[in-house]
Amino acid sequence: MASFKYRPDVDGLRAIAVMLVLNFHAFPDAMPGGFIGVDVFFVISGFLITGIIARELELGRFSLVEFYNRRIRRIFPALIVVLCATSMLGWFWMLPSAFAQLGSDSFASAAFLANIALLLQSGYFDVESAKKPLLHLWSLGIEEQFYLFWPLLLMLAARLRMSIIAMAAMLGIGSFLLNVALIGSNPIATFYLPFTRAFELLAGAVLACGWINVNHSSIASNRRAWIGVALIAAAAAILDSHSAFPGWWAVLPVAGSALLLSAPAAWVNRVVLASPPLVWIGLISYPLYLWHWPLLVFGGIIKFGPLTLPERELILLASALLAWATYRFVETPFRFGVPSRRRMFNLGAGMTMIAVAGIAVIWGRGFDFRLPPEIRAMASVPTESFKWRFHECLLDLSREMTFADTCVERDRHPLVLLWGDSTAAALLPGLRKAQDKRGFGIAQLTSSSCIPALNADIVSTPNCRAMNDKVLSLVRQIKPDIVLLHGTWEKHLDNVAETVVALKKETNARVVVLGGVPMWRRGLPSEVLRYFMLHRALIPERSPNAAPPTAYDAVMRARLEPLGAEFISASDVFCNAQGCLTRLGDAAGDVVVSDQVHLTEKGSAFLIDSIIDRLLGGVAPAGRAR
Image 1 (cartoon, helix red, strand yellow):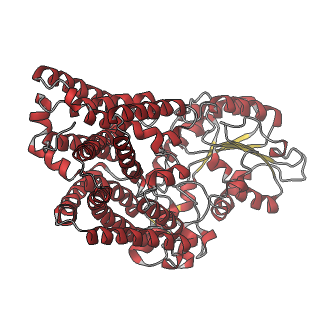
Image 2: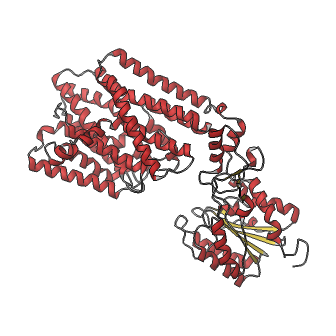
Image 3: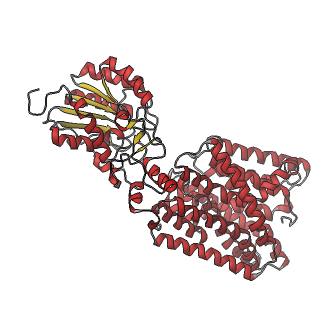
């Protein structure tokens, strides 16, 4: 049975675990497998909790009420503070829909159901998950669920005189096999469900119960400790967000943690893990874990964009300072002060109030009265891809490779063929509006995330190369008067040049290349919200916060015009010395971009109206002989 004697190396192992997680969240490219720090925490929790309960059962003095009292005093104080702080930040910096989601997550966290709530929303590694300030509390949900049921099973085992180690091993093996069986067919559920993660806590439980049978000699301890270090390091280095985790991979951090916990006499434990710096980090590891992720998320929200390396480093420093203050002034007084049932009930009441507040935020739809209606509408302007004929003439190449027959208006001339990615498809509303006045025909052959660049391999869109070949063959058949090429022009200029050469050689069409529109790094709707939060006013009609591709426009023009293409700069239409256009009026629909780069209907109409004479110049108008 594990000893009650304090082990500083366990706090040192906690420090390793929390630093792995912090580095994964703040510097994912440098520590792609750092998420296994949570698995280290699970093993530690199973080891300590089972050791304490089993010893008290053996002595006949275990009290379920006192156990829950200790857990409440350990978990609730810091959690209440962080949940309150997160809700306050959400009130000031979140749109109503996002704040309502935060209310839902706060309720789930207060009800010990954070993992289940996140399971029903999305995966841990999904892009949208990075915007959830309470995402990291899924692991706390699993631990809390373990604390609710494991003591009851241990009490049952003691009453029936069953072997605790046998029960823990049997349940642990069952949990591990269930995890392996489900990881392929339902990886998100396997990641979040307590049944498929319980084996990690139960591995610590088995160790706690079999402690007396472990060889504690110096040589054996050192061997186990170094193997444990190697397994944890290998998991952190090898795994990433694409790994099928937990699955079989979980053996690495779980076994590594158990081996380190089994070797307190090892040099690694005595000198490294028990060193004062690691012990100090281990002591504040719980509030540090609670604080770091909300601060990283709100840092991005308040900045309205990706954080720089120094900014992430400063946020981790702030997390450590807040963690120390929480440990010193919140956690320690409750945890180590004079225990009382009244204190337990007060903490329970506080957590209940947070749950009720979360329900109120959900019921109030994120309290949308916090923002003026026009700001809410502008900051939430949708990307109306249905107006671009998505899945018909704007293809998702992971699902379809054939354009609808309606994509080409063969009976109208001059015929303008639009070839490009989704930013090209966003030009369709503007072309339709111009078509009403000018009577030209439109052929739309666009594919999401696939710029019109022959023989270019687009990593994110493997079928793009084949689709561009297909579009070129269709251009030969359609015989348009004008081919308009547009996309997010960042790479593959040589391939764009190859496309222009092929079009000039194989068709009689004029080839017009439209340069990229300004890029709003944070997204223009976020710029609207950010400006209001900082200035309590509507964003000006022009802002300097966009990135106009002026320099790249010059490069494209110099490269493509000698090949026979005509180059038009979209940047010149939207931007001047005062900045780039943000809106065409005061209504939500007047915003010119719906995200970072896709034009709204009004933005599309404004751009096309500005360039239509150049686009159609020199071509016979509708109704005349070709």
